[in-house]
Amino acid sequence: MTLRPQVKNSPQLIVALDVNTLAEVRELVEQLDPVVDIYKIGSQLFTASGPAAVRFVQARGKKVFLDLKFHDIPNTVASAVSSAVSLNVALERSSTEYTKKVKPVQQSVFMMTVHTCGGPEMMKAAVEAAGKSAQKIGVVRPLVVGVTVLTSDSKEANISDLVLERAKLAKGAGLDGVVASCHESKMLRDTFGQDFVIVTPGIRPVGGDAGDQKRIATPTEAKKNGSSFLVVGRPIVAAKDPLAAAKAILEEIQ
Image (cartoon, rainbow, N blue to C red):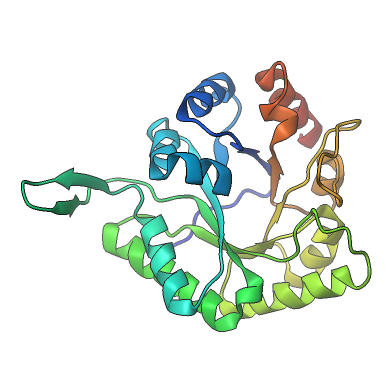
């Protein structure tokens, strides 16, 4: 079976590149290069710039968390995952058609998301496709994590039960973990153990603007509750000094 990436015991920072252009990506990655190793590419940037954004970040030796939240019939999601795994593959145009040429020693995306509400069959298809595609092109299989409930959802009643139910489905389907708010992290860590990956968005430094996020937390709270990865966007990306903002959050994590 294809090995998955190693996950550190202490929380890791992921910076969300929620911007529109490769020029903005270049500026941010260059500024944050000394301290940030993982970047999230979501629907905003991927829709605007496509696979070029992924390849750009990878070319600078950084890891990509591809957050496209795949949710469709199993076959369609499997095909999308396979394509995502091989985004690193160079495309060369011949005189008659596009042909794929696999470069030796390439990396795949580090991690990607699917929606847990797509069901067990869809999630199993995603994990299987990730493993097969990674093995075929000779790269480490990306982590596949399931989105449980969005952190912009302010509904309070039974939200923990819903997250736990969807996390159990994800675990049973073979996913590496889930995306969940800090408010559910401790429950998930206690239930599923240390190897279960918990990605926590909605991270805001003390006194930071919540924006459209409802269930937010500080880096300290997320670390205490057992989150594996902390996703931070606007507090860093929109800061006057992104590097200083990233350093401050990393200091709080450490």
